[in-house]
Amino acid sequence: MASAFPAERTVILTGAASPRGIGRAAAHYLAEVGWNIGIIDLDGDAAARTAAEVAEQHGVQAAGAGANIADREQAVAAVDALEAQLPQVVALVNFAGIASPTPYLEVTPEEWDRVQSVNLDGVHWVTQRVLRTLVDNGVGRVVGISSVSAQRGGGTFSKTPYSASKAGVIGLMRSIAREVGPFGVTANCVSPGPIDTDIMGGTLTEERKTKMAADGVLPRIGTPRDIAAAVAYLISEDAGFVTGQTLNVDGGLYMH
Image 1: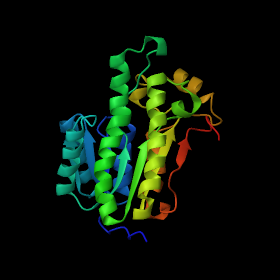
Image 2: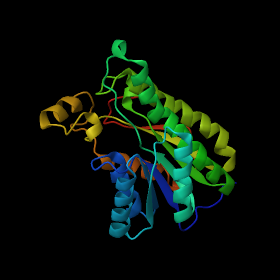
Image 3: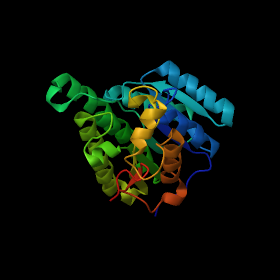
């Protein structure tokens, strides 16, 4: 039987310090609904500034830590540091990720490793460390951020190395869900379609937004808030019977 959510609970977000990123929007959204916020970002100063901003605006506790999450020791140390400063960690959302528009036949070993190290290895190392806490406490939620690119085979700004890494996140979360379910912990994915952020290759023009939206069934592309709301559901106490799933938030771009 899973334990109940503690009254004071923390969610750790990776990659949540980018000014126009999904992670930063989620930090504010989740703080609005009562989560304390831990932020891990490659830019430790930006993580600390974002955490301070969230704490001030929403009256929650928040802290930031810098780490290259592809490095296991840095990933573990960052989680350790956040746990020491914040209430019980109940959830993790893996937003950190990098784009890769390189055509497949031009992919070098360096480019392949660069993308997999952040988008898959980094998710694994942070998740493994956080899961030690969640399993010990008998309650928790883990969310991986995949991509419609993984499900449709590209067709977005990023190409094959990115699609492969994001498909890996789905497999990782499904397998984790099976292993940690008995301990009261769920693991799911959110799979965004085109979202108006800088990872899409810079600020999107209205023309580019219209063209990208044309692939889906809704007349717009997504916003960071669309993804934040999906994440808020999956890490909520009410989502305790949802695990091993991939929630597509893509305007109908990929239906399955």
